[in-house]
Length: 419
Ligand code: AMP
Image 1 (cartoon, rainbow, N blue to C red):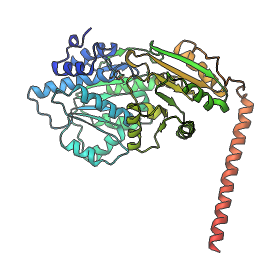
Image 2: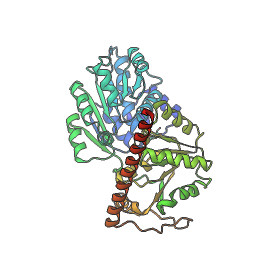
Image 3: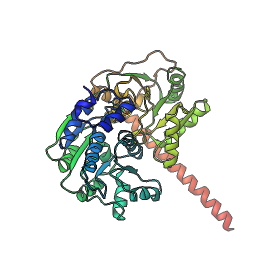
Image 4: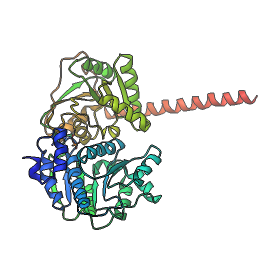
């Protein structure tokens, strides 16, 4: 199948050729003709399947044709909502690529930075707007954005959107959109609340499902190392010594854990940096740019920050923490082995996480091959329920003690000063 056979117009075909895309991915093959024919879409697809082009190309085409036929577009007519800033920037970059020979104007808005740059761009005139929900509503409330002329609405990564607590924002946005519009809805998973939300948005949609959310790309190899909590970072260094791992995205459950790990890796002379929600937006972009340019070998990311990361030919992903939600594992490892490239996902499990590995294996329907031959094998046993309870109690006690001591020493400081 060729892109031309999907009904895509020449200016976009040329851009795809420049980009080096030869054949459409399965989701593009199914979704593009349907969207061009005016259908709503319910897309069940994870990242790495080519879903961005699947919704961006037909929306660009519709708007380009509208403008060519003399339609006057005063306000934004295509709106794409996505949960994270990185993802928003990336979608906009994709649109820039695909729309470069068309007359379609586009921009991206997200929070965490001053608004004036974004407002200026909006005032120059925009056809397609890519946005995160918070900043969008903010600018709508200020009267800077008018959504009354929206003809094409895309909700991307709906499940993650709900996980991140954006449900009310989404509902508010839907309320102000015109009811006569074409809507495209994408989600990696389809739990009940997502199905309900999709019903509020879509009108007799075509369901497009490429890979079930539980499946992992065929081209992606997965392995697991079992070790102890105390030896986890040594094992990571051992793994990173493999010269075949040229660049790697390492997942950490917490922001604090990500920073700590980066400090340790730097001590061990690895070019590493962290990306997470506590970092300033320009810092996040700088780090991402360095990583994409190959100046950083290791990028340590939390799940939310990792959502938008699309690095061409990223071959390695490491789960330094095993996620307790098995779907998160599928999302994480979907970062490598994208669009048919080969990839390797390495997981490192400490005893407390062994049960999460079992959940993941149940979801993906296969056992993850275990690497036995390494210097830090797992010898500790997972704690029993009773031990865990005791341990939590002890942790709580230590925390209280720490705060009590801190308070005491602060009080001592003030009374000394007041003397
Ligand atoms: P996505 O699922 O939209 O995040 O896309 C995953 C990756 O596949 C991105 O790096 C895209 O640039 C790339 N891609 C999308 N469509 C194609 C295609 N038809 N051929 C080759 N690569 C593609």
